[in-house]
Image (tube, rainbow, N blue to C red; front, side, top):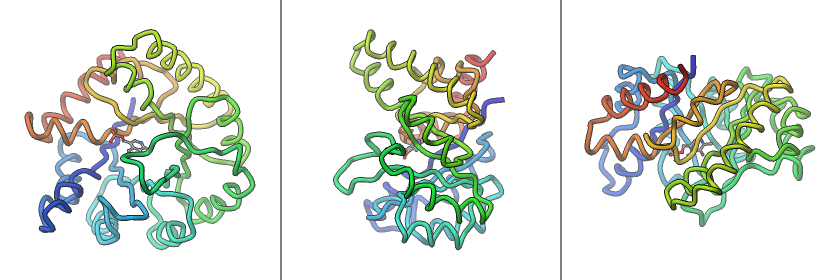
Length: 244
Ligand code: PXP
C-alpha cells in the first residue's frame, strides 16, 4: 500500500495571517486522520512562518498518526527533534527568502556533517529521511550516511506539468522513476512529494518503489472548494487507482 502523509503547514499559514487561534492545525490533522491519512507532516521553519513550536507540542500529544517533522539540519532543530522524538524527521534545505523548499538537500556536499547530524536522531528512534533530487550521486550519498528514507522532490515535475512543458515533465518523471529504483536497490525506503495535485499524482503514485507521498498545499487549497476530508478522499482514490 502507498501511504499518504498530509502536510498541514498551510492551515497554520491561514491562522497566522490573522493572528487568531483558528484554523487549528491539530484539528486539521485529526480530520485528516478520519479521512484516511496515514501520517501527518509539518515543517517547522527557522522563521516559523507556518507551523510553530506550540503546534509541534500539540501534534505530538494529540495525534495518533505518526508525525513526520520536516526541518533544516540546524542545531536548534536537532534539539527540538530530540526533545519530541517524532516518528520521522525529514531534513530539507531551507533558505529564508524562498517561498517554499526549492531544491533537494545537497547530501554529497555535506556528507560528513549530515552523517554526524543524523546519528543522534537515529539513536533517539526517529526514522531519518532526506529530501533530495533524483541525482544518483545524492541518492548514493544518502545511503552511505545511513538514512532510512529518501523523499524525492517532485516539484520540478509538477511545475513543468503546470507550465505545459510536457517534454521536460516527462524527462523529469523518467529521472524520478530511475531514482526511485536506484534508492530502493540501495535499501532506502522511497517517499516522494512537493507540488503534487490531482492532475500530477498518478504517475508518481504508479512508481512501484514509492511507499509514501507527502502532500500539503494542494489539499489545503482544495479544502476551500471540496472540504478537507473530501479533498483527501479524492487524492486517495487517485493514488489507489494509479497503484492498481
Ligand atoms: N515534502 C517535503 C519535504 C516538503 O518540504 C513539502 C513542502 O513543505 C512537501 C512534501 C509538500 O509539498 P506541497 O505542500 O507542495 O504538497
